[in-house]
Image 1 (cartoon, rainbow, N blue to C red):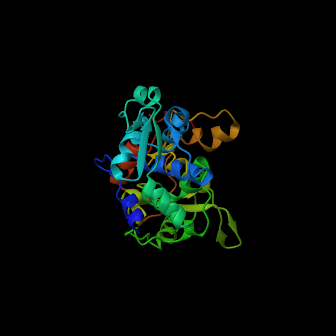
Image 2: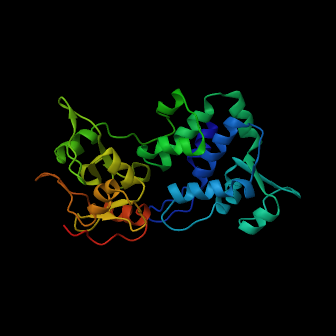
Length: 297
């Protein structure tokens, strides 16, 4: 439990709910590489492109660099860096890390613990995912860093103090009458809805409550795009579509680009719409770039 507690308390820059998943992403990547080669190090110049891709895909909307976590993760006691000159990081400058051959690796004591306890790696990965990313991204993030998890992936860890609300899905889907708030999809098999999910606007990992005014009933596609920052909700309960999204197919135009400026479908009268505080958090910390202008009907 000592290592899980340490992972749960990673020191990260934070202000007003700001997302700073630099260290969690580096650790997830390192755990994936550990599974392939428990003794191999990560030379910064070799893995920089991979780490930058992870930050671009799963990090905050603003531009950032993997040099920051590569150096600063040392202070959390789970990471070490060596250069061609010996132990110690040359700092967080990209040029220094490249030119001095900086190579990072999980701390020796942590590597030893991972060898002793076969299920520790899965628990650490699950903890990092739960604390820093929404469930809709967990599967693709595991694939992106090359992590293969088994039973530990589905176990609730006691170090995660806050429990997810069990009725969130039922309340949100009922409020939106079992229709995607973005496209109106309402598929069922018999009486059972399929492909519909309760999405948190402000992520649960960042104190988003399990309440209707922090939720949207969305189809699986639009849930994923909401969590990736392609879609959002504006002040007037209209759909935002990022200008950074590019899609030339008819499907991309119809299912994404054409949503720009549309009013949300629902919630039904008597149910609370998405609260401004949650819309604003998503717009600031998840949504990428500026919204597209409203699409003509």
